[in-house]
Structure formats: structure tokens, C-alpha cells
Image 1 (cartoon, rainbow, N blue to C red):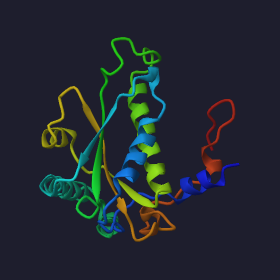
Image 2: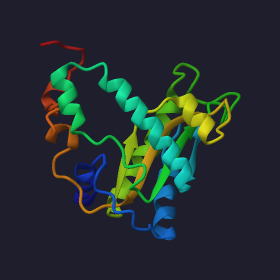
Image 3: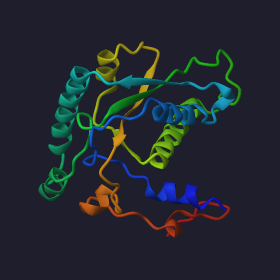
Image 4: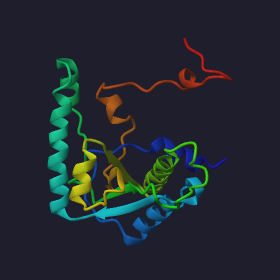
Length: 209
């Protein structure tokens, strides 16, 4: 049994506040991207691309947009939830060393993508597998990763000149960290508690209760 793999899976965290901004060696970043690119994909389409965003001005523009979306979400919460949410840092865009934007090209591998004819989203699932590979590889390299989800896709597409046919899937903040928290942020701040494995296992058919 590869205990190192299991340890990496359980040590991984969605990092927000612990980035140091220290540089990432080129060979380390290359290993992480190579691991992402080694992910399985439907029909061997490899429908992902990776945009490395280092430009401070681009990152600042994106951060301002994220803050606006944070305010939009906060306005939908009741008082108790808003108070909890106010304590949660939602991004490390400015503090991390580099941002990696992962995109999805639905036309990659076409016109006939083997295995996608019945499940249109299989290509998108493939991109998520590449993201998971990247995240675990970064964790194994003692780096942190944070997935920023407070943004509108059209804004990000315009900001990075992404073609209309390409979908931005994830803005990932990547870099060295002071530490990885033992408990995920949302649990530490009382936003939500993790469900036990036993509550999500079904046998043969979906069961309730």
C-alpha cells in the first residue's frame, strides 16, 4: 500500500491565507504541470490548457472582481451566515506565487470524441481530473493550492483573452505556504461540517434515510 499517496490526499487543503509568495523552482512547476497533463481524458482528447498568470496587474484586476462577487454573495445571506462568512478568506490571488487558469476546449479531439457521445460533460470531467492531479502533485511538493470560485466566466474570458469557444474552469492560486491547516477552513470557521463516509454509501440501489 502506498501510504504516501493516502497521506497526500488527506493533507491537501484549499489554501487561502497561508501563501508566502516565495518563488517556485521552474523544474517543480514543470513536474506539477506534467502530472496534471498525465490525467486520464475521455477519448484521449486532453481538452485542457493551462494559463500561467504572473502579471500583477492582471491578478489585481481579477482580485477586484472576486471581491465584488464576494459582496454579491454576502448580500444573499442571513445575519448569522453573513457573520460567519465575513471571517472566511476566499482567495489568495495576490499572495500566491502564480495563478494557473485551467480551461476546457470542447472541440479538442473532435469531431467524434470516443466515449463522449452519450455524456456531453465527460470532457469537462476530464479537465477536473487534471486539476485534481495538479493539486495532489503540488501538495506532494509541499506547495499550497487554492481554487477561486467567486468570479463570472465572461469576465475571466475577457481578462485573459480566452477564445469564445474555450471555457475557463478554474483559477488556481499556487505557491509555497507557511503550513497546511489540519482542519479545512470551512469547518474551522463553522460554515459546514464534513459528512461521514457511511452517509454517502449505497448498495445496489439508491437508498434514503
